[in-house]
Image: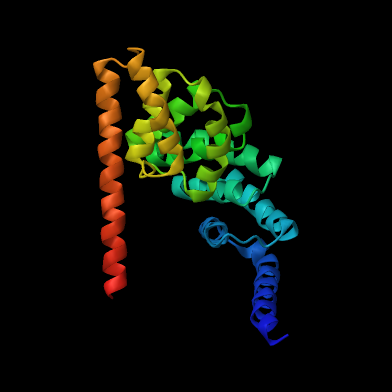
Length: 234
C-alpha cells in the first residue's frame, strides 16, 4: 500500500492541475494556450477531453480574432495531434489562420505541421508518400518527434517490400539526416539495398545518396555515444 502513495499523489496533482486549467480557460490568451498544450504534449499527459474542449473553445475564438502568431499556431496543432485531440471547429479555425499567415511560417514549422497531419493518415499512405515525407524531412533537418515517428514506422515497415529502389534510397537518406539512421527502420531498409544493387537498380546518384545516409547514421551514433559518455562522467 505505501508504494501506491506516490502514484496517488501524482494522480491527485494531475487532476488538480487539470481542474485549474478548466477554470482559467476563459481567461487564457493565445500564448498561454499554445504553451499550455505544448507542455501537456511534451509530458505525454492529457487533462482529459472536457478540459481540452474548454481550452479548444477559447483557442477557436482567439484564432478567429487573429491573436495567434505563426509559432503559436504550429505549437497548437502539433500539441493537438500528439494528444490525439480532435475538434473540427478548432481545426477549421486553425487552418484558416494558418493560410492567412502562411508566408510568415518557417519551412520547419510548415514541415512539422504537414508531418503531424499525415501521421493521422499513415495507414493509407503509399510508398511514394513516405519517401517524399522523409526526403523532405531530411532536406529541412526536421525530426517529427518520437511519438509521431512511432505512428509512421509500423505502416512504413509493412510497405518496405513494395518500395522501389529510389524510394528506399530516399527513405534511408532522410532517416540518416534526421538522426534515425541507426534505428531498426533504417536497418530494415539497408537490408533490402544489396538485392537492388545486384540487379543493377542503383545508379551512381542513388549510391551517393545511400552513402550520405550511411555517414549521417554513423555521425549521429558517434554523437549519441559522446553525449552519453559526457553525461555519465558528470
